[in-house]
View 1: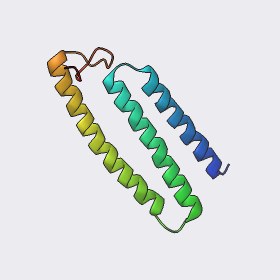
View 2: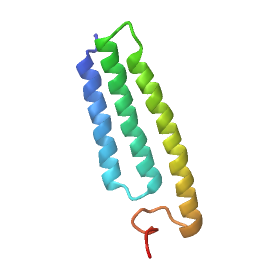
View 3: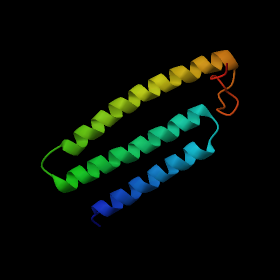
Length: 103
């Protein structure tokens, strides 16, 4: 069975929806970062699928996906560093309990 581009786009939409649902329902900062990574992977799947469909002989979709992976890795490093710093100060990583922006 040959997979069409529609299968990849549906899978990508499902992954993105799961990521949004996770961001809206989770209270743990680490779980929220994991859901953001899931959403970025859905975007990567879109880039690769559309790039392979529109220009099958070029690697433009893969290049965009590699760029997104690089940005996602930097985002994960900075996010985890912030979470570790918050945990050292407050000893919790729940986003509801942490209020850093107080006077």
